[in-house]
Image (cartoon, rainbow, N blue to C red; front, top):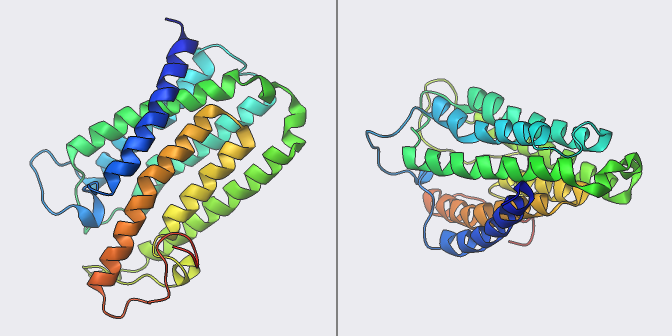
Amino acid sequence: MTLDEIYHYLLYFLFGFSALSFVGSFFFTTPYGRFKETTSKFDLPPLPGWLLLESPCLFAAALTFFLAGGNSSALVPLIFICIWQTHYFYRSVLFPILVVNKNSKPVNLSGILVGIVFNSLNGFLNGYAFAHADHLLDPSWLTSPYFIVGIILMVVGVTINIKSDTILRNLRKPGDTGYKIPRGGMYRWISVPNYFGEIVEWTGLAIASCTPASLAFLCFTIANLFPRALAHHKWYREKFADYPKERKAIIPFVL
């Protein structure tokens, strides 16, 4: 079996797995964060747990892009792999350092193992796609409507994501415990703007790159975050009697 055949089989798998995850998420909420109710001797501290979970996407994408043949020296593919690596350096290294504190809950080992498998798969698929997409060989792609609109969406999504994470991070003062209602930014309109920003960001990548792998990742992101956003919204409304009634779950003014 060739590497290209492996790529296509794994791509089909990710599309199918996304559909199953979307349906399953309405019946089972992944036990991390506020939805993690019990601890286990197999739990890991949040900082190393998060690093182990997210970092495979960083390494898998780079190794595949540069070592699996393709057009890794072309300008446009290099720009896309740099965008990818920048995001996952923030997500796997900077984000946990900024967010994790003494009140953060440990991470379940089974969740970490699933995350390692998925992020390795996702990194491979997108690293391979960037290096092997023929339409990305033409430098004029950088002036195409797809690239321009996609990059604008990515910047908007990243901005929403970082701003929302900052608001969450500053909710608790030193010594505070428990949960509070986040306010400001897009929290004026939705309960989980960080999820909304993530979806906008990967929608931008799918448009900017026009690769099947980026579309598959977008599908998985929506399948994973959409039901979880609804669960977050329900949790907030049950937890806080004064939770803003006009606030939606994940799509401003809609849902």
